Length: 303
Image 1: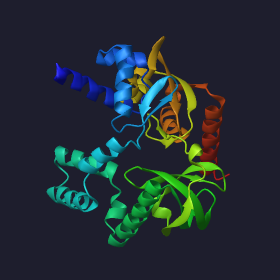
Image 2: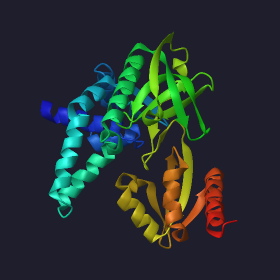
Image 3: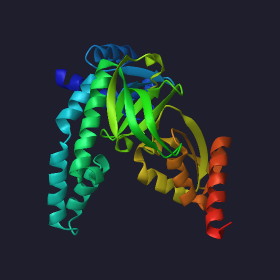
């Protein structure tokens, strides 16, 4: 039946749009389609507004797909709607669990520290609009007065913007000067000016991946941990989509092998349950945790 086929198509889109790495075999098993039909669906999706890419034998739908952008435009609240709804929920009070759940969901998708400030909202909207037009036209922009906490500088940056992220709070860009792709915060820009220069480094516009801890980036860092029962339970409860990554290792221990874009998410998990976790790899993550512990000890002792 056509409705059954449509259900499989929708489920396949959901799996391909997930940050999880599902192999062709995984998707075929979960949707009940053959490999031959799976590749037929891929061609169908490409012909209907989806951008697909392959990573580690796994297919994904690119966030920049026109179809997804159109759906987000229909489903998301406008900024004014979000602020009004947040105010109404606040007036109801703090004792209603449904209201608190709705507020938490809104807070995850909207930066109300920006939305509450009308001038900041206007400024951010103008910047986002300029970036959006530059992305469509494939033009270079100048980020005027960009404040960088990493380099501790405030200066102009010439970049090629190619992906708005995190509800338009961030933009992913290629910076020719450093020959790197970087994520820039909209709130740290004074102004954005579209230049009369077309992109020259489009081939270097790397895909952005989101790990299970909701950090995004274009690099994958492998981490391998041995978890005790408590750490395993906390991980599965906080990240149910990652339950399949945890496998028994005997004697009440569990192995977790995961790729992350940033050590901060998994670092927070490990440091919070340090007594119940053994770090097996990789060496770069061990060094990250070692430096964090050393820095915390120095702060506590004042040395």
